[in-house]
Every structure is written in structure tokens, then in C-alpha cells.
Image 1: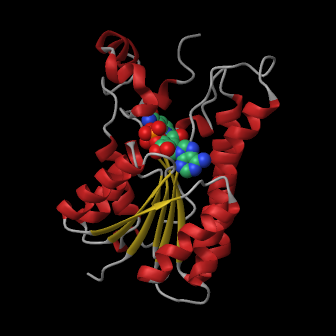
Image 2: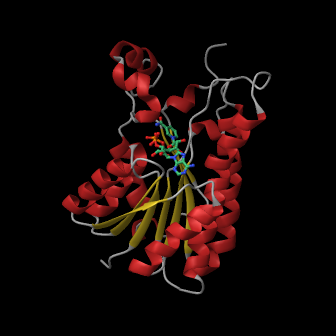
Length: 255
Ligand SMILES: NC(=O)c1ccc[n+]([C@@H]2O[C@H](COP(=O)([O-])OP(=O)(O)OC[C@H]3O[C@@H](n4cnc5c(N)ncnc54)[C@H](O)[C@@H]3O)[C@@H](O)[C@H]2O)c1
């Protein structure tokens, strides 16, 4: 198998870090894009190398056009145009209802979780130019793209918008062999679920609502990402793949 260049955003923690290591295990070159924690990004890069891949770390704020451009330029200078983009960078919902939500908060979340997906996708595509050959974009969305939650208007709107961005990109880029898909996790044990990671009783109270009886592990999302970016998934584009232990199937049960 040829070595690919894989750009992973939000790769200093959680699902992004697990994806970086997953692609490292596949023998790829992984650009570990991180927001603010350089030491955590170094740890991810070491794990990628230990898994058998090559790694570089690059700082990038996905909501900042110039920062995204600089990060991709650094990757392309080292390794050439990327074949795979995994966009995992994101902020969680705040639990604030629309009545209480400040415009600044709304913008912060949309800028990161939706505009960040636009900026990273666009720069990935322009970096490829007319380069041919298989390529893949994966956005880590959420079951909350369609299963809405009170207090999550910012997050649900961003992830819902991401669905349409993914589908539009899929039809635009299909003729060039670039596949674009969304992964929609349920509850995954990452720093985004900090309280559940630290408080077993709280975690179990949530896990009771999951048909499979447990939260997911970030490596399970990474396994899906590696599959979706591989030739085995060559006919899958514009899809939203749910990975949630059955959680979202229960959304209309209870009344
Ligand atoms: N953990 C879950 O239960 C869960 C469920 C569904 C969807 N998701 C999605 O998975 C993705 C990854 O989340 P996670 O669970 O790994 O959480 P996480 O908090 O561990 O990772 C999020 C990463 O995004 C980075 N980030 C935040 N703002 C950024 C910005 N402006 N620019 C660049 N990077 C930025 C953070 O530094 C962090 O590394 C997110 O998009 C999240 O919405 C997570």
C-alpha cells in the first residue's frame, strides 16, 4: 500500500489523537494539527511514530483562514498535497438555551465546528489542485446533527450544517475521485466528556441510556475513519455513518 499524507485537525486529544494513531498504524504520514497544547500534540506524534507511521506537528486554528492556509502549506512543503483530511477539531455544546445565548458564543461554535470544516476542506482541495488519484475528507460530526438537544442550538446547528456541507462537497468532488463523508459519534470517552471520564457514577447514569450499555472509545471511531479513508470504502461518499452503540435509535422513545 502506498504511504499517504493525512492531515488530522484537533489531533492533540480525543478522537483526533486516536485517528492520528490509527493512520500511523496504517503506515501513513500524519500531520498532527493542534490548537494550543503543543506538548499533547508531541505525545500524539510520538504515538503515531511508535505505531509505524511518520508524524509532524503543526499549530492551526481551524476557524482562522490564514492559520489553516499556513498549516497546509507547511504540510505540503514537507510531504506534498494531502490525500486524506480528518477534521476532528470542535467545541461542545454549552447547555445554554437560545433565550440566554450570547451572539459571541453562537459565533464561536459555528466558526469552529462549521466554518472550520469549510476552511480545512477548501484548503485541502486547493492544495491538491488538479492532482488525481483517490482522496478522502472525513468530518467528525455528531448524532446531534439530527438528534437535537435543548441547550445545544449552537452545536446542533453547526453539525446539522456540516451534513449539508459534506453532501455538497461529495457531489462537487466525486468526479475527481475525492470522497467526502461524515462520521456521527454518540457518547465517546474523550476530554469533551470530561465529567464522565472522571466520575464513574455519572458515566454509568448516562451509559444506561445507550442500548449497548457503554460509551464508545475513541479508537473505535478511529477504526471507522481508517476504513472510510481506505480503498475498501471506495464507493462510499456523501454518507453519514453513525457510531453510537444504538443511542440515537431511542430518540422518540419515552412519551
Ligand atoms: N466525545 C464525544 O462524545 C463526541 C460525540 C460526538 C461528536 N464529537 C465530535 O468529535 C470531535 C472531536 O471531539 P473530542 O471528543 O475528541 O473532544 P476533544 O475536546 O478531545 O477534541 C477537540 C479538539 O478540537 C480542538 N479545537 C477546539 N477548537 C479549535 C480550533 N478553533 N482550532 C483547532 N482546533 C480546535 C481542541 O484543541 C481539541 O484538541 C468534535 O468535533 C466533536 O464535536 C465528539
